[in-house]
Image 1 (spheres, rainbow, N blue to C red):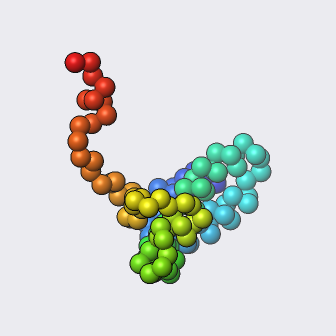
Image 2 (cartoon, one colour; image 1 turned 30 degrees about the vertical axis):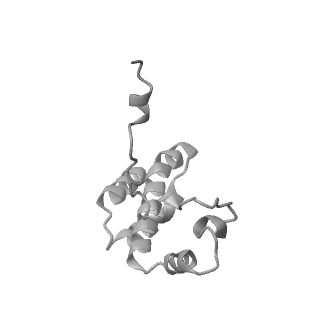
Image 3 (cartoon, helix red, strand yellow; image 1 turned 135 degrees about the horizontal axis):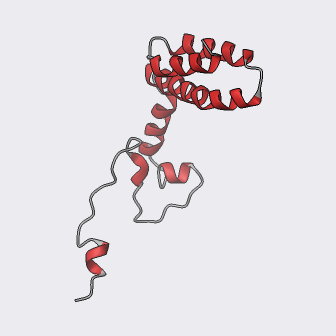
Length: 121
């Protein structure tokens, strides 16, 4: 079997339980590729395997950084929470909309939508 085809097969067959072994095997196969064209074709699958490994290994262990950030938001005497901790400027009435989990929807807005308010009457 062609090395690029095997890397592709590893990519599509990867699971949370096998990802580390799959990445190691794909790296070994990548080292055997003679030309840049083959390496470029394999790079897409290598990147995907790396992303899967990162995501799955991050979900498997507790996030110490997440715990620190939660405490920083609730700490008394720290104006602005996350925004001020990152060096941003928090206004007096500002809220930290980014305080939810990644990919969460922002809070619903009240009032008419922007598109509706732009319609000619």
